[in-house]
Length: 570
Image (cartoon, rainbow, N blue to C red; front, side):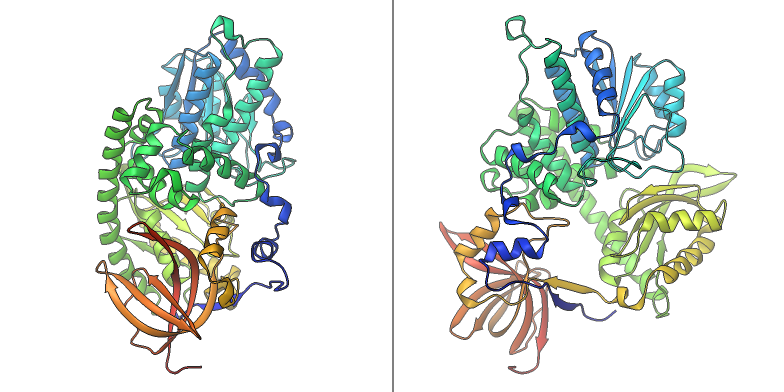
């Protein structure tokens, strides 16, 4: 598909480094203040007053509350947060349910509704799901149970008949951030609930009901927000920064600490990337291969021993997930190479009968990155079938400029009955089809993608912050950039580009390329992960500044994200 093209942002070289990096991301210098006082008020979230009032009454009257979550890291952190905070408010009858993705699928389905009703609740709260669960919400509401939907996903054509729907992306919503993760939405809902309980005189330390400090659960908010890869707009950066601050200070729940330690990350030095690449995948492994209740148990653990035991189970599942993913990606790449032998193909579909449905999202993501094409990966849905046909569950991943959920919506409208159901975001979606319709869907998906994607969008671009002067390629600059985070989706970590002479290169750790580079008089250590030797005298690289701690010494190291061999010194 060709090598990525490096393109740099427009930066004002007259400004100090951090200021120009912020401005290049359309952020003002005042946004470096990530204190809690900068957090948006919950007041303009839809239905926030109604939802908080109902939860407050449930707490005061000691009614049964059941939390229905999702089987990913955002869902797990949302459940753990809701249970922790409601119990801290004084609720004594809080339970939770997380659908088994292999038996029930996503959201408050009618089957999950029946399981929830069996717990005899007065209130059901969905976290990180519910806005598209029309049938399930209807069943629970008809049974006389009030449903409070807290979600951040895009709604379908019909909203569920819930008692309240708190969702920042609903039409007409005026809340200042549409980028909240599910854990952020339930956090805001509980902030408002606490406010109502306070004004009603509920909290009384002398009666054993002290008012809880909700800043203490921001470790969960940070984890769920980063792991769900939502854009880190300013409000989300405040939430993540405050959560990271508490983790580094040791004011963190034992489960997150145990997961960090198993991933060989130092909690006192944790960055947003550690949550995204080390903790999040271990939590997600439970939902992909087993039961997300294991992950929730880890997050709810109150002592280090219990947390370590459940974290080790998650770590084992994650190792199984990695092995399974590796074999599936290898097979998927062969399928994709056959499909893309036709250079006109834009939308790519892959399927194999023995693939695991919990892994297809990761496969689609890997292929999307490799091909720079929208991809759907399918796997059998197990025992489920429709009219005798095998049902396939698919996971779609998109490229910049193509809204994948809207694309599926258009296909469903033009080809009634082709897609059983679908839902998701701009960049990721899930769907179900019949196996007998796979060929027809693959054709429709490619045709729709061709209509919406121009040739320029199919050229993979690596956006950088341009060349960095040698004087700013320093350990001090690396530390300043780290302190200016959190960086992540929508607020990318600074990436610089330049041409360097290669003084030496060698393979370390079996797959990684260790380099010594020179630019003029400056000699720099660098590492490119999962990269083969170049045997080139000069390379063009896109790199990040990083701190390398080794035997008590901290030195500058370039993390190479893109490496292109050049034949001669420019």
